[in-house]
Structures are given as C-alpha cells and as structure tokens.
Amino acid sequence: MQVPLDRVLHPEQGYVTAACRALGIGISAWRHPQATSTCVEKADLLGWPQHRIVKALYLADASCFVGIVLPELGYRLDAVSLLTQTCSLSRKRARAFRMNRCPEGMESGTCTPFPLLRTMDMVERLIVHRAPALENTVVDISLGGSGPMAHHVSCHLRYGDLCAIVRHTFGERVLEIDLDPYLLSSSEAGLQRVELA
Image (tube, rainbow, N blue to C red; front, side, top):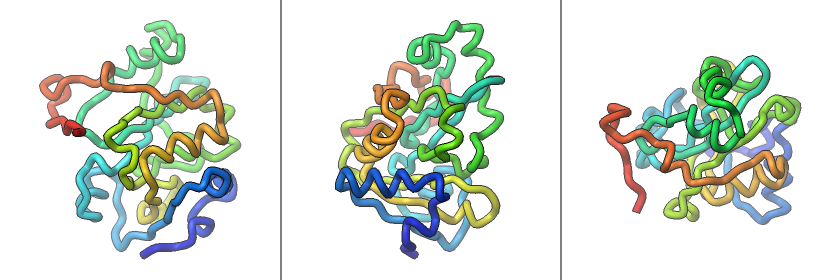
C-alpha cells in the first residue's frame, strides 16, 4: 500500500524529500503486507527481478563507516580492494572493516543509502554502483529504521535518481563508480550472477 513519504522517513531523513523537490525526482513510499530482511525476500514479495532491489552495505572499523550501495546482482564484493582504491586506506586498515554493525537508525535488513543526518559525520564515504542499464529503472530501496515495522517499509524511485539525492545532500562524500572490477566471479562467490543488458 502506498503511504506518504514523510510518514515513513525519520525526521533526520527529511533531506530526501527536500532533494526530490529541488531536483524534480519522483519517489513513492510503500508499506508491504509482510516483513522482508533480504533482497531475495523483497524481490519475491514484489514479483520483481532481484536486480531491481537495491541494497546498502555498511562496512565499519572502530572509527567510521563506509556505505556501499548497489543492486542485488548475485555476487560478493572484494571490499578490501575497493576500500584501498577508493578511500585511500592501507590494506591493513581496509581488512579491519567488517559488516558487523549498522549506523544509527538502521538494523540488519533495513539498511538504507539514506542515513540519518547525525550519523553522516561517521560515514566516511557512500559508494554508489554506476549501472547505466538501470538508470531509468524503478527500484526498491529500504528506508532504515528498527523494529518489526521497519521491515515492512521501502521506497520506489529510478535507480539513476538515488545517487542524485545523496550527492545533493552529502556532496563529495558520495562516489559513483563502476563496482564491476571489485566483484567476485560467480564461482568465487558461489552465486549466480545477473548481468544487466
């Protein structure tokens, strides 16, 4: 069921609505009949292909987070190489990053590319996968939150507009790059990879 976006965003995510207004971006919020915690569950619920479900992964060390935003394509990421080459980290420091905690305002299964404003001082960088084949495709994105109801809510917008929203607010902290060089092959990842046409 479609719901007003302002009703499901945290007050510190109001920048999403402001950016959409300023940039002329269409976005809609949805409350789903069942909870989901994975991209596969969300794709099954919506009846959409998995690549139309966008995930936000947050890697953390003792002092900061790095967010990685990408569609579910059925692969794993070489996070150490990605962090050393995009965040100027040594391999030793990059190896210290783990996906073992979420920024405030999120939990496993609700991570969003739209972090709370107060947490952005801890998010060193948001890396968004450049996917030209998806630019004009409507995708599903979690909106964060915690507790059972947070797993029922998401938004729909064009994939190409996602980066515009976060860049409008967070500027140079947002890096849009092709993540293909950092993707493990399907045999390495043990998954079937989806290729975008």
